[in-house]
Image 1 (tube, helix red, strand yellow):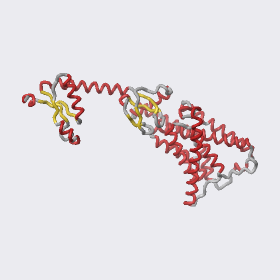
Image 2 (cartoon, rainbow, N blue to C red):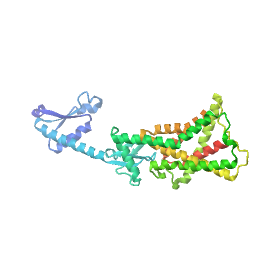
Image 3 (spheres, one colour):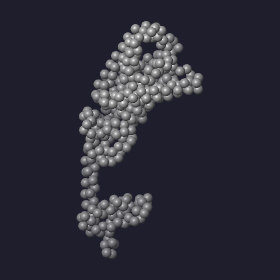
Image 4 (tube, helix red, strand yellow):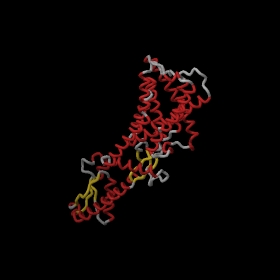
Length: 380
């Protein structure tokens, strides 16, 4: 024994005891006796592992070469398994935010953080086969770009998403922004709409309803996804209406109170519409007005939440940043309501954006948006 102890050679060192014990067990299975130096010391206080050189796996000089070959083979197999697992990617929905996400095979069976909402998710063994195939392919492409941010494909996708977002903003945002800025700059002048007859206003609202719905066609064609992607399904329509009513009334009450408190505090004037209908309003007029509000809410939620947040998440990889940018865009074309109105719109955008990221559903938001617009109209 004295001769063996004097000829021991350290062939590997480990930070933790279980790692050293596993390696020792592999050597024992091959019939090679081994010893561990400083195991007790490190186990008592693992903070000093680096200071003492870790737990040292030692064998006799005669067994050193054979032991190194065994340990090398073990490391090589582990590396091969890791590389193979990386080639596997599982795609599934986050149980919290309902976003479609992907993880590498090396993370299967582990608890990870959702890249969209940062909540814990259990990574399954296989992809969710109930997902749309195009959505799976898009998620896989986005995952590979995130894993290799320097590749040409990632740059091309980022460039494409940037151009696509600008195009959508051009067809569905800049027109309203220009109109809002003009109205804000000329807010002390009379509103030309107050000179319109009731029939002319009705025709305008019908026209507005058709225009805002047609604006959605390019957006939907660009996203190439079914409306079920953003939760617009008949199955949960009743629940969406119920939640939407509650959310709309609550958000409007909060913003209404905030506007009046800030108006009194800073001596500002809350927004009041200059549109005055002196003639009796017909049933058709109310129907057209309600349809216009609903169509407008539908279009804005599809663009600002369903499309914009989803694309900004793909571009920047952060849900909070996507919510913030979309909310600022949403508030900017409400500047015709003054600074208080634009600020309230930003607040509503933050609430609605958070709701969308949490639920990945737009039904309740469309209802809530319509309720907010209706209550806002009645309070003018």
